Length: 186
Image (cartoon, rainbow, N blue to C red):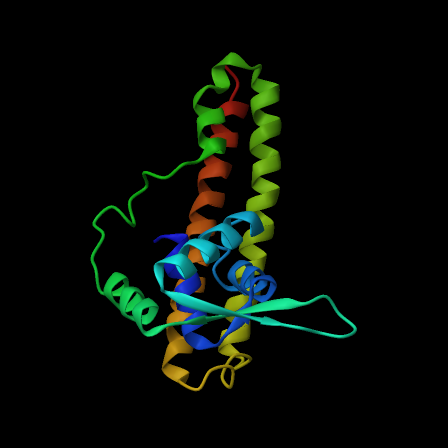
């Protein structure tokens, strides 16, 4: 997935400001794709130059002016083209993971230092597991049922949240095993 296509996907639901896109991106896609606001605004400019979206400057009296972005027909065509394209490497474990690189080189630290990293990582992952469980519970309770004109789309949102929950639980299991291995008496 590219950041551009994620932004196009969000804009296919409704026109938004860059601020709203940043918030919605992080709220809905952030459990599997991170983006900084500066990256989002850079992509919005590039997509506007490509003709995939347009923007309208909205003058406001009591608030700062804002720019509202809308997807174009060319942008929608690009989004649908990307959506229907199979990327065989998209779901492989070959991702950039600085934490895993630190663990790979953990032998350069003391066991206590590496254990501290693992325990800290475990707490972060446990928090993420809880967040994902809460999101799944919200889906099951119908919190998102009226959120979109097409209730079928909400099912797909739930699928990504379910993936996030399961992957987080697997990561938690790995952390528990890694901690147990390092805590074994030699």
